[in-house]
Length: 91
Image (cartoon, rainbow, N blue to C red; front, side, top):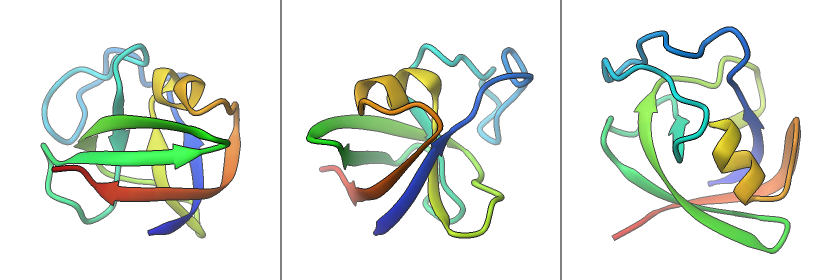
């Protein structure tokens, strides 16, 4: 998939994710609407790449394909919304 990514975190720290794990913005996790929980996704943006664990559902904003944890967005070099993000299933 290619599209927009955002990061989520404020107000969610410690709350249970869809997987049941508490949300920790410093872990490399992400939210996706349809991929199975527990899937590892390889995400690239801005010349950076990172593998993240899908442990939540979202994003709930039209046009976005993935919500990254704060750690994930930092690893990809963005804050807020990143354009032209590629998300691929990692082996």
